[in-house]
Each structure stands twice: as C-alpha cells, then as structure tokens.
Length: 161
Image: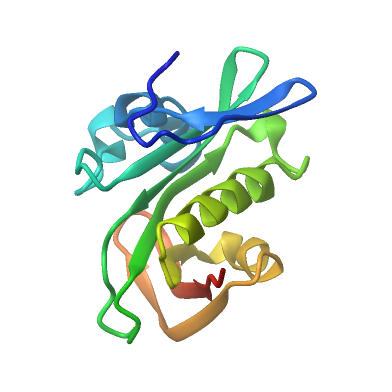
C-alpha cells in the first residue's frame, strides 16, 4: 500500500519492512493482541484519525504483523510540551520475541525526533513494563487499573536529537 501522508521513508530489511498505515489497518493487529474477545470497536482510540497521528505497520513480506500509533497528546504529569503518546503497540503472537516490537518502536522514535518531539509516553500494561524499560522508558507515577484491560503504568522516554 502506498499510504504515506507523512513523507516517511520506508525501512526494509530482509523480509521485514515498516511503513505508514491508516488506523483501520492498525485494528487488524490491535484486535487479536490487545482486545481479543472484545468487539472490533474496542480497538478504536480517541485521536486515531487526527491529522497529527502517525500509524506504523511492520510487515513480514506482505503480512501485517506489528503496529504502533503515535498521537500528539500531552500528559499533565510531564512538563515538556512537545509530547507524543504511544498507543496500540502490538505484534502478533507468532512474531513476538524476534525484536520486531523494538524495531517498530525505534523507527517511530526516530521519526518523532525529526518532528522535534521531546517526550514519548504511554500507558503500559503491566506485562509490557519490562519491554519498555529495555527500550529506555521509565515509570512515572503510580500504577492504575483500566477496567476490563488490567493494571497499567505511565511510562516515558525523552527523545533527543
């Protein structure tokens, strides 16, 4: 697909590539990984279709296997003003443990550096905290529960040029 509203350069290594996608494509991976057993509408997030929102897809050959979205959104507990929120980070179970999540996240972080962003933050599921810590994110504040989803932590990463 040639959907590329951000003039983002595509990355291609071996059989994997990362490229911009639209929000509806992101739901194809968000749903089985983050909202299994729930209606597909539960994958739709506020801000998914804002002009400033970036959705990235990670493909194995032609199959979409990973996604992440970055929304221009400020968190009250973070003082920097140039913030993006990471949402809907997901890699299909069969492709987990191969470094693909790290690849798509790193790609998105580098893209946001070029947009002069200072901070990326997310509401990390308890099971994902270690992954984000390995990627340089740190916990801020206290854990909180999202009904029907589980315990979460606010995590942030400063991105510097």
